[in-house]
Amino acid sequence: MTSDSISGSSAPGRVVLLNGSSSSGKTTLAQALQRHSEQPLQYLALDHFRDGMPDQIRGLNSPPGTPGHSGLNVVPRSVAGQRLTHIEFGDVGKRVLRGMRRAVQALANEGVDVVVDDILFEPAFLADYAQVLLHVPTYLVGVRCSLACVEAREAMRPGRFPGTARSHFDSVHAHGAGYDVEVDTEAMGPRDCAKRVLNRLTNAPQALTRYLAGTCFPMGSD
Image 1: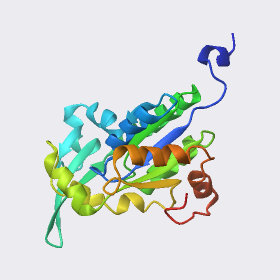
Image 2: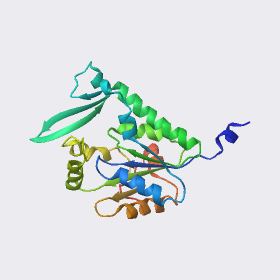
Image 3: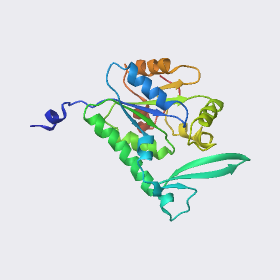
Image 4: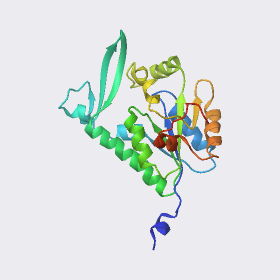
């Protein structure tokens, strides 16, 4: 019996990689994509892996050398008089994130279409996605709304530290690549955002290919 007969598929599935700040609407968009896609979409999110970390490596302003610093560390700061909350991943946390990206690859290699809800905190995170998903059709989707909208949503969500979204609002999009498609979750409802993304899936992805080739194109090109 061949590996293809075991997996049931010889062609990789597609990956829809959603990137945006926290509270930008990625989870709602992922759920809308699942509802409106003609093909099943497996949902995989950063939150799943974050919540799976043991409590001792989920730190709150934990100093270097402590378990909390090695996993996911919530670090409050004051910048130019503004209260910000930075999310920092230590060695263990970054290994978990590397594993997440390879879990996406494993699902796609089984012919499963995957929608990924992630935050590209560092340019290196996108670089790793690009290498891991080199042979997987991957659509990079920018999920945006205004800072005021993000902060209003953040204030309504339990367990969110104030200033988290503001701390990475711009930097998550400064990864050196364009997007295959972008959506504004403030200007458009979930269904319309999902339809915009699904319509883009009718053509081959370009963002990660051009990113790897070093010829990035302007954001918004689709």
